[in-house]
Image 1 (cartoon, helix red, strand yellow):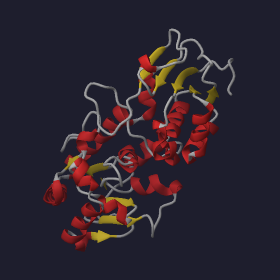
Image 2: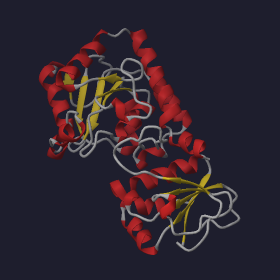
Image 3: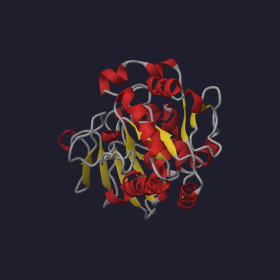
Length: 313
């Protein structure tokens, strides 16, 4: 542990369930990585069995290994002034909370109106790479074209997106662009061509994690099709951090929701996607610049994990 003499502010994670183990414990790792950036210490309090389950997850073990994370037994107390996040209603907690400030985490796929929402996180591999200097450098890098890179396995084409969320699946989005704009589709990078639509398959042509942000920074728009099981995907957040304008069908799932023509290019359905690309083609350089600045402002105010944790603190 980091010891009781550690004077950093503390967030307590008082966990009773395995709900935070979604995506291999990714959200735990992201929470701790962002906490490091604002000098926050995290104390995990849970039963040993849950601790073992967390350690068994790839990103759970990374979370536990971070130098600002420590564990205490379920019967232990938190230091004074700890802000505690728990995964059950306070009325259901069975451990000592004394006079701690406590917030219950509602973990689910649907947003709850009026409830603060933790921003969907970047991938843990990318959080450490993006300091303020790098972020600003990426945003002023000359940009061109529409870019997408990601997995294109069959599971990204299942009907669950339409049935569960009312949006096109990833493979449906990519198929629409390949069909309508085949003469513009390229497979690696735009290379300065403002008309290029890059559709890069991460299975056959992967991008090294250390190069990811550099590649993003050279492109102007990011195509944000859904993930395999839900619309939100970490690469949309990473792209916005780099100053790319998102093209997406689920702007309403951001909090606050993205606004078409202000901080995103939003569409609905296959015909709406085609129309979105044609609207982009008709945009002036000045209009694109305004849109990009709004995207950067949105990211800084609403998607930066450090900003969210600072508001909690």
